[in-house]
Length: 214
Image (cartoon, rainbow, N blue to C red):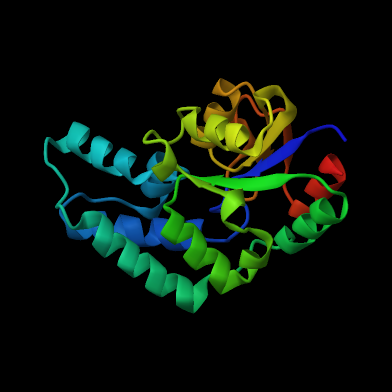
């Protein structure tokens, strides 16, 4: 076995949530007077924790987002998840192969614990992720591209950083994994390969990932 721990990003890697959440984020920011396209949201916020949205808006405009921003946004996202969210094609097969091969795995997401759980319940992935396998940027305070979240997940799982591989689909996530001293496999389904600078391997289909890991 090449790695002692596989750390999955969640949004865009396990659940197909990035198109939903970035569409809604762009619309909400625009509604609040911060014109943002879907492409802008993907470029600036994909893979990041909510504090990055607040920080970038304030940096660019000098204005703070309203206190209720996160609650309103998550309410809209969770409602859309219930209507639309699906697992990323191939996600179940990869998890089945890892479990069958005895390969330890977990999820480390910029999203909140609630967001992770809502998505997993809707897509049926909750059967693969008990509480001890779920880590959020909420646990560490600083989200990606800081390495804190991935290092925290590795510590909690009892594995040294150099024996971990991270599965990521965002430039911020790849930067975080590299900063943590971990190998990182870049998923190019939504992000051009050229933007996943520093990735150890690149793949475009989760079906390919199982062969790389097991």
